[in-house]
Amino acid sequence: MFQIIFYEDRNFQGRSYECSSDCADLHSHFSRCNSIQVESGNWMVYERPNFMGYQYFLCRGEYPDYQRWMGFNDCVRSCRIIPQHQGSHRMRIYEHSDFGGQMMEITDDCPSLYDRFHYNDIHSCNVLDGYWLFYEHPNYKGRQYLLRPGEYRRYSDWGAMNPRIGSVRRIGY
Image (cartoon, rainbow, N blue to C red; front, side):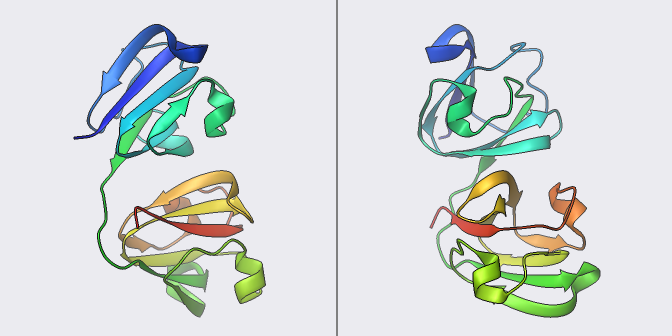
């Protein structure tokens, strides 16, 4: 069972909406989102409908205002459950599009891609096992991007505007 509750106002006030599944368009349920309670599960919330725009990873807990989930504004328009993953995590990252150039395999969290691999522009990747988060900056800061198992031939496939990735973290290990 997964559950997340969205509130229009800060500190869990105002109109609310409870959700227990993926939702591609939350606009009909509330006009703005200033606080969230995650009752169970891991979630990605998105700034725009259809799982587009800024992405924010939320685990169980309380977020009394949008800055607590590193939000840029009070706009949440879609959400997605991140299934619990039991087992290993494995991903291959590439320095060029379409899996070209140098390849590195990652199996654990990496707070600084540059420190580990001496580059931080990832143009493509193949997620072999588990769910991952890319962060724009080192130490898990900046824009976030959810990567589910599958192939990503170019950075726009995971929703990025450029290939710069500073850190990588496993989800649900």
